[in-house]
Length: 369
Image (cartoon, rainbow, N blue to C red):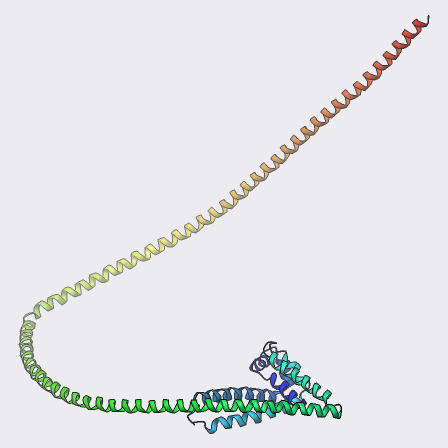
């Protein structure tokens, strides 16, 4: 069981996702640890598993026809041999399962890990049951009963599958017989179509041969008529050519004169274009100079405007400071006037109090007399 768990652990990380991770840039260090031979063995394992899946799919599709070949069995044998070699080589690399599991998603190997935990629990439970002789006998009896029940269930399942297989075979045979009848009917229809097609081809051939002969006769008559017309036109053309030679000579001289005139006009046009190009170049240079002056003046006036804005801002700041100083002076004057008024009030009250006391003293002296 330990060997089975070890093989399952190795095979749980032998996936296309892990192979792709090893072949990426992140898996270079682990790839050096694994080695090139194990990488080739892992790639071969992926290829054989894909071929095995394809072969099983084809076998399921062709089920009931008895067409399973030696190729599927050969691929299965190669897959078993390569799996044993892969597990043996992976056993030689220390801590390879942990290194390869980093390239594998957790959801992808959850079922395998659950199966391995179940095997470990079964192993631990079996070892605990086999600690004593009585417990060993009880566990054996339970195992025998368990396997007996499983055997009965397997027999029932086998009978059910055999019935289903019989039904499938009969259905396949019916389908095969129906296909045979359809093919026979189609072959008969094809023979009928071929016979009718040959008859139609023969009638069409005779029909179109007659039409071709009629068209050939009409074409020969039309060709003869056109030849006579062509000969008449050639004679008329020769006579017209002889009559128009003098006119042609005059036209050629006129054409030469016109060619000279055209050349002269072209020469004048070229000179005019050159002069215009020269004038355009001068105007472009003048425009560039004016543009440069305009840019300089724009920069100058921009600086002047900025300087004016700066002066205005400074004047506004000075005016604000002046107003602030005047407001501060007015506030101080008002505060001073308030303090002076308060002080005069205090002096006046003290003076009035002294005068009042003096009057009281004078009035008291008179009464005593």
